[in-house]
Image (cartoon, rainbow, N blue to C red; front, side, top):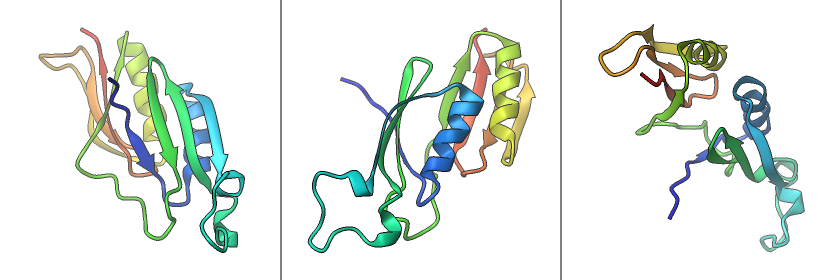
Length: 136
């Protein structure tokens, strides 16, 4: 059994994919746009949806992250969870924390804690909350 997060970016998925590739070193496993779907609803997808991401899959280190534009009917709402990113060094934690924070908002600056030599919380520019910590 695997548990993998599936994030809906409500129209900004392609931008998010490019951001995670450049900032986290994510690798794109696959991207399917609505126009490429083998099954369409009666009447097809609306024209404004055809270039949007129906489903994508990224590998981020040893984890997988599934992504989509969803229905593009409301702003993305990432609440009730936080993605945790564990690094092997303080330097790597600092680099990734700064990268995720570009255009985002720091909730708790990186600092030494009783459970990690470097821990912090940041929300990226898409509204996805992250905890970044170095293994201790």
